[in-house]
Amino acid sequence: MASIRSKLADIFDNREQEIAQSWLERQAAGTRRLSPAEQHEINRQSREFLSAIKGAMQQDGAANIAGPAWAPVREFLSNFSASRAKAGFTPTETASFIFSLKQPVFDALRQELGQDANALAAETWRATELLDALGLLTAESFQKSREDMISRQQAELLELSTPVVQLWDGILALPLIGTLDSSRTQVVMQNLLDAIVKTRSDFAIIDITGVPVVDTLVAQHLLKTVAAARLMGAECLISGIRPQIAQTIIHLGVDLAGVVTKATLADAFAIAMRRIGYTVVRDQKTKIAVER
Amino acid sequence: MERIPILKMGDYLLITIQVDMHDKLALTLQNDLTEQIVTHKSKGILIDISALEIVDSFIGRMLGIIASMSRLLDAETVVVGMQPAVAITLVELGLSMKGIRTALNVEKGMTVLQNSLREERQDGDSSRQF
Image (tube, rainbow over all chains, first blue to last red; front, side):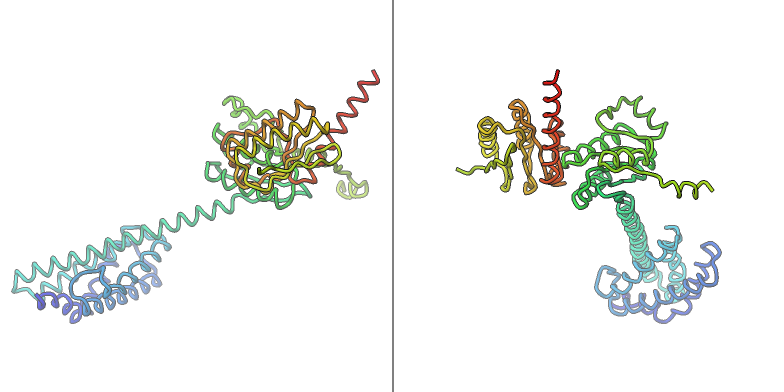
């Protein structure tokens, strides 16, 4: 058993150059045309992978890729998949990095053990199992790095899309952009209420110019935010209602009574200023300058 | 017995809730408050709940009931300093407390009370003229 086990390792040891050569040719044939820089990168990665696998084989000939001896190989593959996922490779392209290694390894096995059919079959099976496991690992880490990317982007989007800006002493504005769902409303509401406490504002203007669709659920979320702000002692105005959205709201039968709504942020701002007691006066000199 | 103190300041009564409200405490407060309003002929009630971190549906409803009772006794109620988390909880519970006036802090709450009292007096004066 020990002798059979070491065969695969021997082959990787003795025929590394040969396998590498044939593998690189296969990879080049399998994928789209690559730039010299990409080709160079793939050559480097392939050699690194082969030397990693060789090292692992020498320590632990049994193809137990979960073992400690294979840690460098696993690490290499997860880094490799992550970099490919970032670079925009397809899953097939990424997985075929491993699977295209099969043919060269089988060729090498055949040349080494050509006479011994039993040993050849056993070693071929062993090699297949090993490479399949590595291939699956690659696909899995590829998927995982993609998912990480998506969830990170979601989190960033959530943070980016809910800024609360102070327009004036005591007046906040909350320009909403994008679709409002339950989780976003929660964040929006929390941010707004915290900002109200922090800035001691009496008015908050929720601008929905950037909200593409207002359905009953979104309207309900808006009303909840308004009610929560009111409980804290701040009044909410809703602005940026486009004609299309005004029609939708009425057709849906949503009751926005009790909330002051305005067509533009400027109108809402003017109302808030007036209620606080500010008046805006245009300086005559400046007016002339503007008209010129 | 544990009680929430009610402070009289001119025409107003001040209530600062510093401890977590439990149901019995809320009921005691309701009794004490209605009696105090009648005794002092108060015109405004200010309830500061800035230290209150947990509000359940019962306490939320009690605040609403207290406000309605005070109005019956001719006193305006302002609830001030509600924490954001409490506001969200109450809205999620479906208690938007339509009849209650709110303000951000004690200072603004007093302004609200004074304004409403002044308006009332002006109304009273004008009605007397006719």
